[in-house]
Length: 70
Image (tube, rainbow, N blue to C red):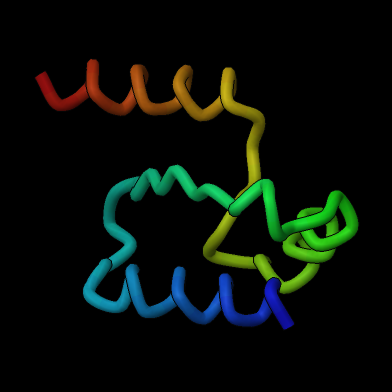
């Protein structure tokens, strides 16, 4: 249930996004109430347009997107 609620929140957050440029979202989970299984379960319903990446990849992509804007 936690994963579905999280996905629904993300979909609500990107409602106005047109998809013409990357949209970077740093998501967090409450480590006190989420188990490793809960986090693993989150990857299943987060298909397109979402892509889960490690933190280092996230910041590399964010930096590359920012350098194209300037």
